[in-house]
Image (tube, rainbow, N blue to C red; front, side):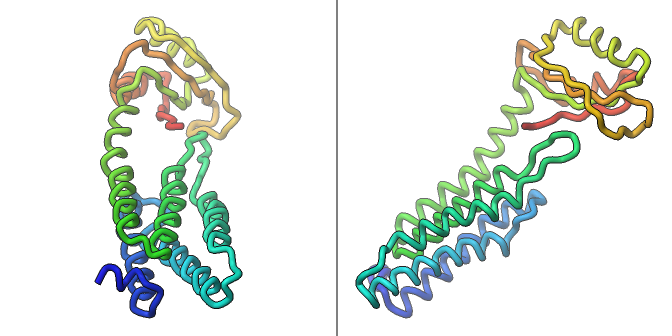
Length: 228
């Protein structure tokens, strides 16, 4: 049965496209659960579309015997980058979001090409690896980032004494300032000063605890971690 479905026939082609849509939808389900802009339908369409483009390329090769079998799949992988760029967002506080979603879209496209080519065993392995990365490694990465020794913080401070109070906090904890940048952005309170500070805490600490301590200072009116 597997060999039959891998052949270039109506049943095999139908199976490949449906399998690509199914795998893409499962990957998109994980992204949608995290509130990302690209969800189930987007990933299903990308994966199924890539499989369809590959099948069309193979059909042209069978029909003319003078077609580069890698031309359309290569164009698909290049073109998917434009779709991925649309998922990357830079917020007003320099918080970059969507990089993982963009990379996952590209991987889903590659998965669709693998399925469309008829390499079913390879596509199943690829699907499992992608799911492992976006689910298991995502949790590991989040835990690592939450307790790393480096932290980037966006803060809105009282324009009178706010900076000095933050400096006192940093020195009392024996942190090192890697960079500090004043931002010309609208703040929650009109007269506040907005700054972005990168700190080296010299040892692993929970970022949520550092943010809570900073937010507890009277001169700090807003504090948020920037994840780059």
